[in-house]
Amino acid sequence: MAFENPSRDHIKEILVAARNVAVVGLSDKPDRVSYMVAEAMQKKGYRIIPVNPNATEILGETCYASLSDIPEPVDIVNVFRRSETVTPVAEEAVKIHAKVFWLQQGIFNEEAADIARAGGLEVIMDRCIKVEDSILLPGGK
Image 1 (tube, rainbow, N blue to C red):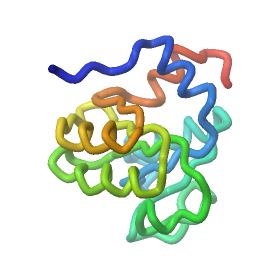
Image 2 (spheres, rainbow, N blue to C red; image 1 turned 180 degrees about the vertical axis):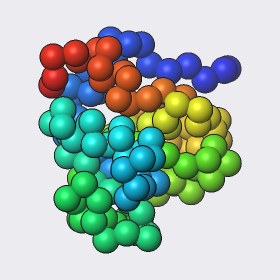
Image 3 (cartoon, helix red, strand yellow; image 1 turned 45 degrees about the horizontal axis):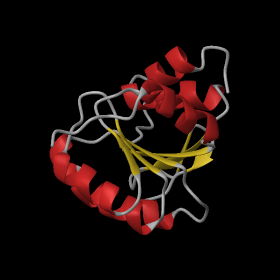
Image 4 (cartoon, one colour; image 1 turned 135 degrees about the vertical axis):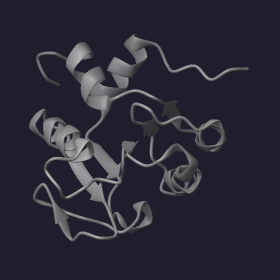
């Protein structure tokens, strides 16, 4: 069976319920897409938790080397990594009991999706969280 993202209505429910968004691959460079998307989401009221082993702080938040290092619950694991590198991220998202495994636009990995779904996570692939939020929650959360 081919992968299918949840309905737009269900994605809206996910976004409304989410508070903590761990962003894997978040760059500390303001000109990078990951930074721009995370900054926009932070301004919309989401708590951004940066995951980047090469930084200590991004967007005023403590940066963690891995998902496992985050000391609080994570609602959405938002991934900015190449498609072929996301399977271990899915495994780690399952280990930390995240609720949603979200691969940004252009990122698609069926194996990672299967791992996340088998671990009880909702999976969204090849969609930009900022675009979805802007369309589904134009007035904010």
